Length: 535
Image (cartoon, rainbow, N blue to C red; front, side, top):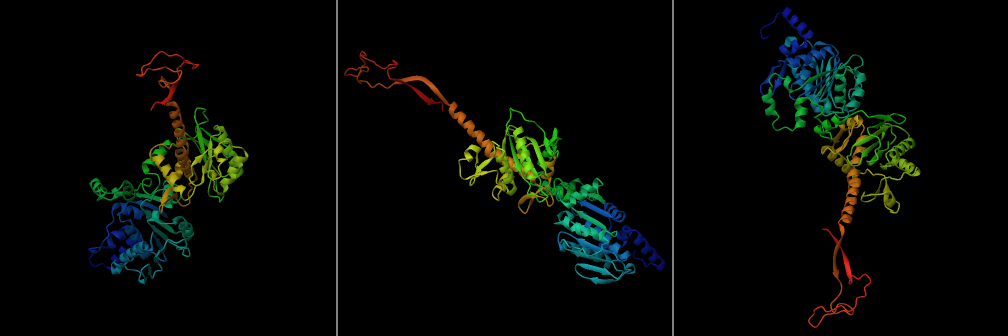
């Protein structure tokens, strides 16, 4: 609209803009191009739909591909909200204060570049991280600290790259009360794995378990992108990056210990247990005791802080197939009794208990109950030794020790077992923990607010099977092979030396002559059988 408007037309345009943010943005919003400077911001259909949802829904959560202009779209919506509404307080948070400040900068640029006749409010504050109009509306960038915006009564909270904001759960808990007077929220991000606040909130929104409106914007919502563009763009990108940056795939994004294809494998194994037992029905059983099989049990005892569970797994020695699992919160003495009785049900199988502070209490109870097959190891080398040997060795340690040295080893062994399809679990509880067991600054651990008790017990199981049960089985096979290689040879040789007294006589030329006397009782002529090895 470059022509001069009459006063009546200006009023009409202002009313249209105030009622419809898409009309305002498409006709009067200008954004800064890095080369061409301010250019008109023409919304794509998917961006217009987002703006409509921002108006219609109080809470919106957007999982998006990269470079769709959603941050700019959100900034244009904020500019409209500030310009045409009084006393709107808007807070922007992001992974970094600078990222949040960049969105605020876009808001300022849009407002400053509207036609002069449309500038119905004047700028009163114009700082790097904040911007305020004389109608009482303001926007401010903030860090993601736990107390961000706590003192404000917010009209709108914008969380940019929400899946990548650390401690966002705590931040949301602090900010949600500031929206209680009718405030709104827009959370937008590329996915960053599962088990975080963004994933939980989005998936619950999809199943209508919260008040958020879910919006999914994969790469192909952009009208100027086609399959040829996608192939060219992803030519040098790994699958995880493609999933995160373009496909809006939660499961394939993020840094989980277990690869996506392996998570899908684990998911395919999940099935309901045949029985649910124990006083709390948390003992799941898929296979009852079979005398033809051998089993072993791994137990991890809760520390008692209210967040952890006491757990154990039962596996078959030969197939590493899970046959039983327990996860619950019971007193230590009851858990010890449950471990004892379950182990007894499976033929008093080898039972390894992590010997942390409360784990020793369980181990003492098992010793008191005279469990005959507890796991012991040598203190320095962590070499497995059986219970009978351990009682006669001074440096033996009862239970399994998870230390700074052994933790990465057991986790690596579990990952190897899963990757090579050696590990078989049917538990939905364990599968859920695998989905939130991630790499965090080089350390594999549960996502914040999640548990890893079942995962760590499974990791110890993989390590013990590989280093104790398998190696012990090999030693048995070696011994059998050595014994089996010994045989009796029926060939004989004589120990007689020609010319010996009372033995076969020889003449001066060394030829045998008549045997005059032989008083060996077995008449073997001093013949000895030979014991030889096959190999």
